[in-house]
Every structure is written in C-alpha cells, then in structure tokens.
Amino acid sequence: MARTMKAAVFVEKGRIELREKPIPEVGPNDALLRITTTTICGTDVHILKGEYPVAPGLTVGHEPVGVIEKLGSAVVGYQEGQRVIAGAICPNFNSYAAMDGKPSQDGSYLIPSGRCGCHGYKATAGWRFGNLIDGTQAEYVLVPDAQANLAPVPDGLTDEQVLMCPDIMSTGFAGAENAGIRLGDTVVVFAQGPIGLCAAAGARLMGATTVIGVDGNDHRLEVAKQMGADLTLNFKRCDVVAEVMKLTGGRGADAAIEALGTQQTFEGALRVLKPGGTLSSLGVYSEDLRIPMAAFAAGLGDHTIKTALCPGGKERMRRLMNVIEAGRLDLSPMVTHHYRLDDIVAAYELFANQRDGVLKVALKP
Image (cartoon, rainbow, N blue to C red; front, side, top):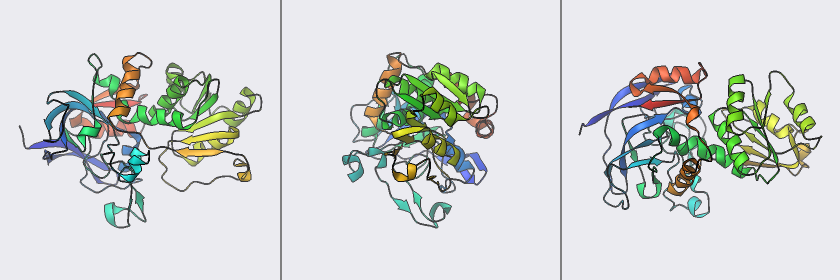
C-alpha cells in the first residue's frame, strides 16, 4: 500500500487544490476507507470563499462512500473490503449532547479567535470531517469512532444512489422532521438546491399534501416537481408571500423550510407562516440575521423556529438507505456531473458558480 494519497486541501481564501498527503494511521477505534465516490457540498463552497473558517492544509469534504481498507483493533462487526458509507457528522455517542438526544452536537464547542484563521468564535457543533479533521475529498479518509458510524451499503445500490445519504438527504429530511409536518399540511421549501430538494421529498414522505418549492432557477423548479413538490414558485416572477397566502386561502403555510442560509430566504420563510407555524432552518448563515417585527408578529404569533445539523451515525444512515432500497425515493438523478479527483479545481469552479444545470458532482478518485 502506498504511503501517500491525493487530497483536496484548503490553502487560503479562494484556493482549494490537490496535494499529496500521508495516508492516515489507523487507531483502535478508527477505520480507513478507500473512497470510491464523494462530492462537493455548499458548505465546502463557504469554506472556499472564506465564509466559514478552517485551518489551512485541511482536507475538505464530508460525504464518503467507500470500501473499508483497514479496521482498528477495537472495531467489530465489519470486514475489510466491505462497502460502507459514514455520515458527514460522525458522533461517538458518549458525549453529554449525544446522551441528551442531540448526537449531531457531539463534541460541540467554540474555537476562540486566532485559531483556524477565524475572527471571534466559531461554533463547531459535531461536524468533524473537513472541519476539524481531514475530510473525504481524497483517496482515503480516516473515520473516527467507526463502530458508531460505519453503515454497510445494501447489495444492489450504486454509489450514486447512496451518495446523498451522508449529508444532503439526512439534512433535508431533518428539516422536514423539525417542521413537525402533519398529514394534510402545506409546506413551503425555500431554495431548491440539493438540500431543499431533499427537504421537499422528506415533507411529502411525512404526509404533507401541498409542498411548494421556491427558487429563482426554472431548471431546479422542474427537478423539484420530480422530487416531491406539488407546486413551484419562481421568486423572480411573483410575490411568493402573496401567492402562498392565495393558495392557502389567507391562512398561511403550516411550515416553511429554509434551505439556503440568506436573510431573504429566512425572512420569506417567516412571512409565509400561519400563526403557530414552524420555520425549520437548514441554511448555513455567513452573517447575522434580522427578524422583522411584522413577520414575527411582534413576538405574539406562537411561531417556532428550529435549526438542524445533519444527523449522523450508522442507524440514521441505515434508515436513509432503507428509504432508497425500498424504492420510496431515487436521488441518483441529482448527480448531474462526474469528475475525477484530479480535476477537483474544475469541479469546484463548476459547482461554486452553479453552471450547466449542476446539482451535485460525483468525485471519483
């Protein structure tokens, strides 16, 4: 086995490039995965743009599909050569947060100013791959706490079919779960990127009978109809709040899911809600948010605002792959482009600039 590997490394704001790095050593609780497919996430673009700080030299990426190359001595129930995925969030389930029912916040703490090149404080939550430890846009990745995080891929499912499970599907479904959707609900999903598309699909699976997808890109709105949206609204052509009120007879939506992370989408999600409605926020925000008094009913509207970080762990991954294996949802059409890891810079350029109808890029070492 070689001693070095290719890895996509954050160099500085505006620069991620391919470099040679040592293949990680495997500790007793770890597993070394040989990556067969990974992808680029919107959060990686935040890192590239310097909007989310990480340490220079860190391997980026957090969505692994691969084969177990080597198992730590304490990891049981798995075999070398087995196809697996691991969640983007990889908790060990021993922390206070995990035992309190919030495993995604396992290891959550604040990094003070000066470390990782950040200003003020950076909340890490439970996200380690491509944030605190080397990530998945490489030939190999070390999975910590492998016993809790490796999930075998069912026979017959391709890499592309399960590629959304580690982050995009888990996050989008968490948005629907946090929205408290009931049978017959109307749910508005703001932004039909990959996470928003999964949120729309999750809302439909949970029983919403009117799922409204909002975006400014007609191509994405067409995909939204395939993924679960009953109706779509292009915010460039209509007043979304007025249209939702018209569609609901003036009642407002039961829930809104914000899947981009901007003031505009957050505020829109708040304004379409009925009294007592829920805003489920999935976006990664790069600046402070404002809550308009009228949209918030001056604090008297019984609104609920919930945030979510991608749930991880092997049980979450198993359940998501069950949904795919059972034929309830096919997310492989979201993989619109394929690149070799060697062409990572070109892949980032395409994805960051949203060219050529890109939704997700499959990266193949």
